[in-house]
Every structure is written in C-alpha cells, then in structure tokens.
Length: 246
Image: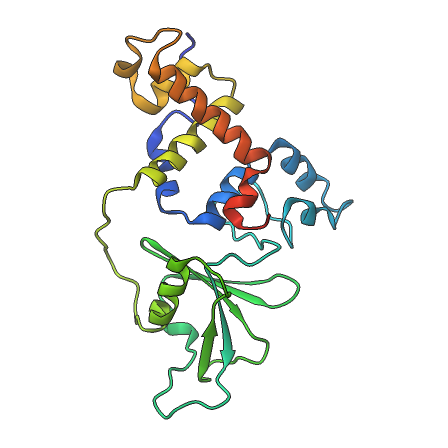
C-alpha cells in the first residue's frame, strides 16, 4: 500500500468546514470536483452559455471552495429569502440596513437581480433583493410556497437584521450524522479522484487502527465503497438535488 499521508485529501481537518455547509454550498463542493465541469470552465469564453447546463446562471471558478465561492444556481433554493419594499409600513417597521447584517457579505448579480449572501459562525443567509429596495427602506420578506419547514420557520426571525455584530465566538453542537456523512463523502471523493484504493481511503478517513483488520468482505470496506460511490454519484449530477434544481 502506497503512503498517501502527504496527499491533499488525507488530513480530515482540511474538510471540517464541510460540516457547516447547507444544501447549495454542498452542491457546489460536488460540482466543482467534476472533471467535465472543470474542463468547461477552462473553455468558458468559447461556451458562455454552457453554465446553464450545469444548473448555474453564471460560471464559478472550481478552484474556490464553498467558503469563498458563491454560485448562482439556476433556481432559487428554499433557503433564499426574498426582500421587497414595504408599500405600507407601520411606524415601527424594520428597515433594510446593509451594515447591520453580521458576518462576511457578498453581493452577486446573477443576470436578473442582486443576491446578498452573508456568512457568520455556523450560519449562512441568502437574500434576493428587489430592484427598488434601497438601504434604509422598510421591507417585507417572502419565502417560496411549499418551502421546507426549516426555511419557513427561520424567515420570520430574520436574524441577519436583528444582530448588530458578528459573534466573536459561538459554541457549536456535535455534528449531525448527516453532516459527518457529507464530510466523509467529499473526502472519499477527493481520494478516489487521486487514485487511492479503498483501504487507503479508509485509513485517511478512520485512522490506521481501523484498517488493522481489513479484509475483502468486511463492513468497513463496504462502508468506504458506499462513500466512494455516493461521492461519484453526487459529482456526476446528484448535486442538483442538494441545490434543488431538478
């Protein structure tokens, strides 16, 4: 077995950010690893409209991970909150104040409207801004009919407009099984693309002690095989489900 410990995919610590990504961000992590997408990115000046075939309104650089990239998906995810001017605001109406929104902020024009993305510890908020909404204006928000319950329940609190600063520190609970699954899948996908064997992947993900009893039909081997297959499936098109574009 080759020594893979120096390869980019081996240290699990490099993937910890994946634990805190939502659906659209996870979708990007899988798409950006697709060799065909990376080739299309290199040829993007000759195929300016090809981004739509990948579910994107605009090209996004695959060298940028989800902490720095902000892909504009062809359809809005349920997590996107739409903001409009309030035509008849009450005296105590909340007003749109860009600088009160906590965290790192990014404005992206996707060809139709401005999308505001804000990141702060453990959170990501996405807003679609109406053309006539300006700073200091009273606003109302909307979520898509039929949106997932977690998206509807989060919108009324509008945390990004009630916080005045980014928390310096925030306690985070233990990662959920679903979050751990995504971390292991992304790491296993990178290992597969680098040509690692199932046993080498298992050692990188779970440690050398875990593979001490490695054998052909063992449970660990089956688990790692499923992770590798899942990563390939998500990279080849399954990411669309995470981004809600299918």
